Image (tube, rainbow, N blue to C red; front, side, top):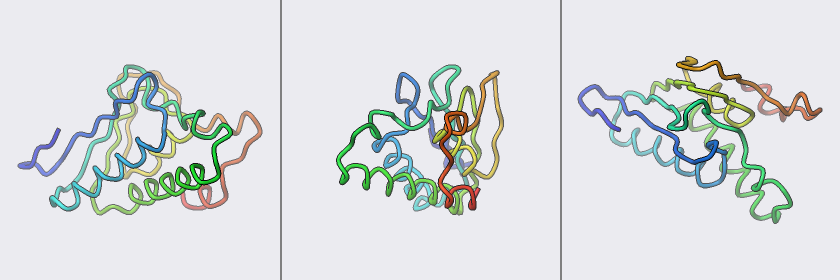
Length: 142
């Protein structure tokens, strides 16, 4: 939903059941941000259309036994989306209306401002509990 007069757009992630971060979501989010920049918007408010879940993190189907080509495309899209959110001149606000795990947490941390709204959701990197560390490039830049 765009409000050209106020210069802000509301961007709602709608990828049931848990807004898993997959190639399509990453590419679409990047496209939306670039489109708003071109239209000279001042900012965006990012949220989820799924009650109690902002994002369940990376889509495990994307990273379980993918072809190397597909994995490289996914990784590039992930890095591009993270960088686009992080450096966009738009003011980015995220309304976290539920759990934000892993890559969902990355989206939250990449925005200028965030607020947990209408939720008792958790936010973080469950990978750490499983013994996986976030990549060094991510730890340094967040």
